[in-house]
View: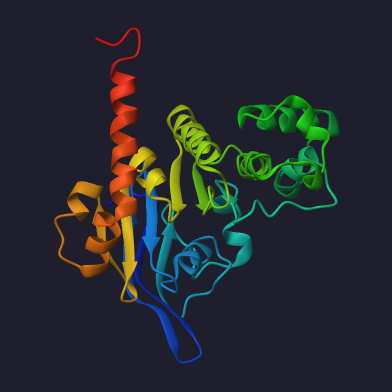
Length: 271
């Protein structure tokens, strides 16, 4: 297995908080170019897993390779060349409240490329803002002046500031109304396809899983118990998987997904 094929490889990951183990001997491979949905019940450590991959959580045991480099053993200055190849959208956007949207987008650029002129920084920030579907004038607004959906897109613009190959998203559609969540899903799928992104997406939104995820990883019992397409997961007999993907919300998500495919197939220009 090469880093070209699997930009993220996790082996034997263990995370403990005191005597409580969130993960034990967890293994996971993320394929290049896929949108991988990560699901699990409350307390299964979805966010802890993401934080471990991006270096905000130090595992007790195991290896995490990102682009072929084991970041669990590397010194901080040794992973700079890896960190500037990913972008992160935390829950709620996690924008700096005292900075404008453009200034928020410029933060990671200044961190890794301090020699870039302010003029070029402003141009890059405006481009990223528009790229995520925000109006250009949103660049000059503060987070308090934005709606919830706009804050998500502003956070996404910052996550894309360094033209990353990897994108990490933690519950990006949480708190959005169904229409806003569907539009965000469409944007993410379009960006992933256009920019060739590999996406690690933590979500509990079944509509998102059905609409845009290529595969889904299920966390339970301190492990990744299954990884695959939703039809593949439905072949497993784990009770949590069966309850999650066969419950009333899942059936509603399937119906929505099927209606969307039917409308797309009947659209003008479709054979």
